[in-house]
Image (tube, rainbow over all chains, first blue to last red; front, top):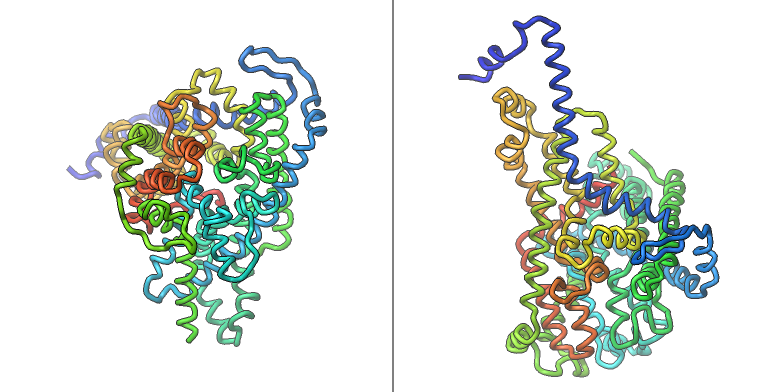
Length: 324
Length: 270
């Protein structure tokens, strides 16, 4: 029996119109119930573990809070005023700013460069392998790869200083040094994340309209000129997206700081708090020292900062990004 | 000339990116004290005895099993919740359909580090601290999974669903028998993405568990790292245990993973 035969026998054609209207309402109703049923499992997870906590944060940041005893008193802005008087809080914001301001532009430029390189050489042998190797670090587990990087940054036997020795440059203390520990973490982060952004740029480059590129070439636009005037404006939405994503990610770096700096050089965030960023401080305040109220006030600050950064970037981008 | 320049440049870039992972092998399978030679050794000897020693002298099998159990459970749940919600978003008309699209998109926008404190409180009150459930269920839904399935289901011909409806087949049966099997690429992508993120899970278990029996591999590794400072061969051998499954999966599916991860991130851009 073909499909058409079925439709004729089941279809509402022969029933009076009010009945078909009723059937339609019943169908709509049914579709609605099924729809809600299908989104329910994921909705529950999102509400209970993400949106719920986000709203809850707004509440607990203004309370003095003891989760285990389950008692709380409204303290208004008290938690925030305590926070403002903690030098380590300001230090952590400075460290985060320093980290973000260096990592984001370096990663973005490097990713764009790598993407152009991979694209330029895509017809040469081994293109797939190169792209895979550039991307690989991004999927590796952070603790496992941090282990080898701690060795790389070892002041006596590590690769980093061996390279500097080879170039006759002064050797550095890396993770043991107050000045070089955070840059060492930055190097790890760039290594671990640049592949992701490279691939995003590659995706952006692959959507460049062929006609435009060819027309530009006919008009004599080559090399730097064509890149500056045509490629860059055309991929600006991707560039903007990469910058926002990189900013959001780097503002929340935790695992590599915890593992790279937690080893032989004292507790994580050291030496001398030089690598204590916002996420690390939240972790230590809330979960190591169990100051939940202070931890939630800090979390709220971070929350607002990240949203604020995204908004500012959006405003800037609206002036600069060329949307097709 | 230009061609050789790009060729060489590309090779150098790829080699630099791969070097740290290569050195895990050099140190883990090298001679005792290979990490302490000046200049550094660069050739892996592939002596697997030290690796096997480390594997058998610490309960790594337990941690690997923990990670595997957590990953597999998370993957199964994510595929189910994503397929269901993706189908509802793609095919069903109900008030709030497009709202839910933004609700699931919004989850990606919430800064994870700022949520940990309230999440901990919620986990405490749900008695999920220190349980496998607490390591799995919070990751049982995924925005990119939902979007992937939604996109795939939107491409299915409407007639398939019509026929199923006229035949009186229930939505769940239709999904299980027809829609999901047709959406195999979406399933594969979701499985890979979820595997990578749950195998690499570190901060969540660090905060939400404290019993060694539950530890996934990355957490166990970080404790091991603190206990065996600068025993480089042992440390890198242990790192290999966490690294190998990822390397093996990546070796076979790298093309798929690269597009999947890029696509998953791009999902936010829509």
